[in-house]
Image: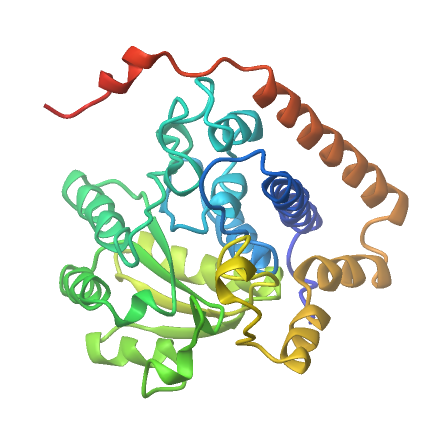
Length: 327
């Protein structure tokens, strides 16, 4: 990859976001295996380049909508990992006061409109945010993340149709990790590229290497510039992969069955986004190795502090179950 025109501070920013996501998710995986977290978790390891590259091209005022695999999106948008970890532990100091859990983290102050556990459920919300910007005359851009499986849902097609018709400032980012749970994408759709569906709605469809964070930044920046000028939405398909399973602990109910070959997993791991970016910045002499090592140590320490914050936080009060309800 050759991205010499991208400013060094942006490169370091993107690298930092990826590293923060990676170390957070690695720790969450360990905690889940130890039985310390309630519910299920869907890790973002392997897909970090998408969220980091996309969010680096946004402003604090721009909004995003996430999915069941949303930890990385929250962190990439600038989320507080203490509040995130506390939410995963089900504590009152969490983003949703311990009542949302892994799949429903939101932070309106940083433009994180929320994660949605329903496949394709967040796409219309992003269009609603784009509609708001359209009516108020704001230059705010809305981004929605979703998987290849969600691109087969009616919400996807209806949302693209409305956004394209009104030229709304919405960027649709399909994180095509090639599987909907355990089903290969090629078994669920009769097309090779989700981005090809953009043609039916008269908007650009862009295919990007979802393991290359700087490419993700570049294509998103182009889409953002287009949206701010009033030229409407863009569909970006990020070809990526998830290193782990659909959810942590899936081995228990797969009963030894394999849905990905060892060769496929090896090829995925060879395109690790953190390793690829680390190699790029060090081999090109952009960032000293010792600076990256110090960054890693600082982030690792902050994640450990987040775990301690969560463990030492109080449980929600019983009566709080009646709070924050829509009546």
